[in-house]
Length: 483
Length: 118
Image (cartoon, rainbow over all chains, first blue to last red; front, side, top):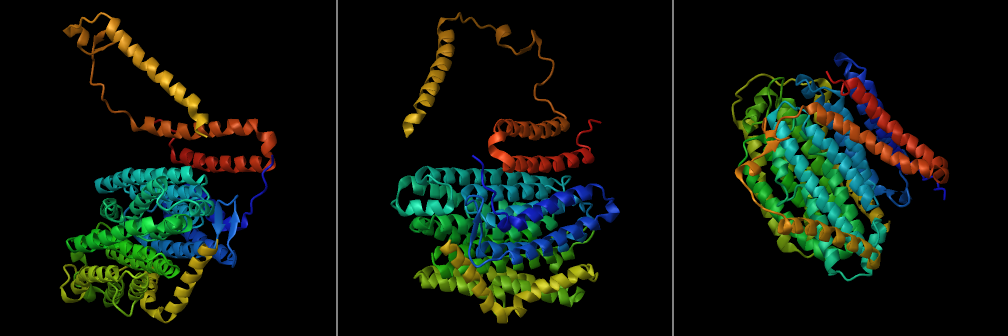
């Protein structure tokens, strides 16, 4: 038996990023500390190159390769482009932060790129094994990145917690997958889907497997009650790593949800719908209420991320094309907002000083009106105030929930979002109405200032094109349904 | 379908019976006259020299981890070598890529000094 050569075209971006990561790893070994900028440049060029390859490789129809293990479709392309984008910005924000703390090493960028490969594989997975492979590649990189500052007790503790809980979550996910495999006889997502159509929806073993899969996903998303690791990891990790793990992996987690629950297990939607409703309400409630009590900005943003994950699950809960596409839209918008917020935390930090407390934002308007304005945009967008993208994202998700006939759920979501608005507005109050403890004007390199501006202004200035972006999301979700 | 697993079940049952039987027979038939000397811990016939929970040099772990990677590589190479005539050029190239990736890691650890003991 000789195996046929698989079609490598849909995998070209993954192969490119992976090879470049290997090259950068080797190049970085022979660079002196002073010339570390080469590593940074190569990394950013890799992301740009991957984006070009992905755009060039786009095709209207979904392309399967590697015996149905890997699929190149519109959903994968949209997610991949978003992942490159937020990672590119994240690396740019992190550069000076890392340099000032002696962490400006090749490892950060190389691990980051390998993590990107993992996320890309997740976005394109059409097989349980590929999905798991991508997830583990991402997780292992992130565990190591969290522990990058290995002399700091906080970092190592965060990494340890993340590793132990993450390994357990992976185990639960795998166990669920094995149960599903036992019932359906296949690991290929489309085959699982077909097999489930022939089985009854309350088949005990199927639902048993489903519960484990949902728990695994909830762990990875950081949805309550599986959220314990999120605040500690966001807080303990160096901010440069938090900006990485608080943005792009959320997009990959969306791929996990879509590929598993919608792509493979939509036949069990009756069962997972109610589980996700509970997860969503708990996440929004716990995330928003506990965030109020935080005086550490990174912890506050961690709880905010928990509540946002709950909100995005609402889109999935409505079990409709519209719901899925609004969830995709929500998650991309969240990644951009989160990028801006953590980017600002990095910008406020200097050598030997971590801007971690909410009080560090006091009087930001006196120090730099421009940056205070950008942070204002990010915060009102997170709170969901019009006219920002955050508002449209929330609006679309809630619309899909109402269309699904769950008006009570929409009301709960809006009420909890209002509670959440408090702590976003508090940041604005601190920036504009309080006096700064430290009046030093805000520094930061020119390119980061420009990127930061693009990042925050995009949340408002792109509003006229919200319909176009939404249409892109719809097309991505339609592609999934056809495949 | 489950019939395929019957030998494994028998194997596990036999293993369980053997294990339990040895312990139980020893306990039932053997003489049992404990005293303080017999019950106290000892090291090769002497009194214990130090606490058995001691610190290991972290370098042991490093070496062990690096060893495992290349040990597993060999585990992959054996079946591949046996089946090489059947997997053909594709199998050959795939394994070379795999080895290439491991070599990248090897160069990295070498240059970083992970292989130096002192």
